[in-house]
Length: 228
Length: 317
Image (tube, rainbow over all chains, first blue to last red; front, side):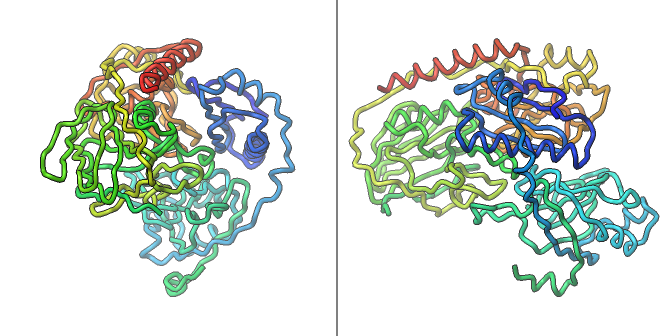
């Protein structure tokens, strides 16, 4: 449920679902996102430019020449949230190569967690992750929660360039860099799998909020010969 | 397929295709993009009698040097821009912004530079021959989406122009007053309370410097480090154009059209819609300040700004 609703500037509505980060709250955010998207598709609401779901917030931006804060706020408060729309989530398996040339931060992680690389990987690969949100850069999934034993803060100095395909972890989350980008997450491997495909106009993003993701390890040879 | 095109003899620093922007893609991580200065993008189209939503060429600082091939067109340039028209017989004339010109095959447009702003716009009558991606022509270089495969233009690229029968020979001109005000009006952000009362005071009373770290993603400011008394990080959440985030170092960043869709820094304020065109145009070295307005004031200011834009547009009717 929305705990607080306010304006973010003059052309966006800020819906706060609380401060906790968990699947239940996030699924509620996603349900609102889906219900609102449906209303826009059916042209029952006008003027909305974008809806941005995140862990526990939903931000709706609109065109101030077509509508205003009070109108959109009222529309949101009157939505009948349909939880059913959000039930078709996928299970996705992502290959990852963790050879030393891709797993850039195992030394740092071992220092912090007092675990060997093999132990960290065993714990990491053992879990199914939930996709909370997609964004920052196109298609980047924010997944969680990783086991408490392998959690670690961001790098003190972020990298200027994290390679495309890098798998990162920080705090309770793990992500995939869909583009080369600056970034401060601990890098444990790299996937040859295309996560964002701009040529696929219908489904450019492989992993969407609500989806479940498992990682499995592949050899360097498989990585180099990967063919989708 | 048209045979009329611009050959790029010099690409300029950051030359892209822009329009109103790409909507409904934030949830996959693709920001709105679009012209940084929406008003000047519309005016450039209007002067050549285009639909206001036609794609235009946006350039920053040094613009492109373009040679027209196989056709005759009508074009306009808006913004605060120094440019020349070089005719095929080598004679040249200094261009004036906010009016239209005829360009013949083998003539060149040399967009030398913007003057006291960052971005300028070039529109051609009939528009460019491009395809929309997710309902927008805008080039998004961060996601490699949109016109020119989501990349800025390079030397020897060609920009095709739709076949236009050039009925718009009538001279058109807008008497545009370039804004000179360096006060940006904002509404308090959702994390305004994260900042000490001293920092809140500084934010509204002192001046900030636009640093060199300024591009289509955002502009970083310096001058006063804003003290955060709660936390320098929030759980990552959505961003919109105009949000002013303050990272741990205390220096504000204003989000522009190509910003990351999600951010984890506290939001001290949000630029009002009416001032977005202006805030994106500040060059590094500019001194700016912020003034708080209420939501209601912001809505009224936006209405007045829209009316003013319409008055400019109507000069071309």
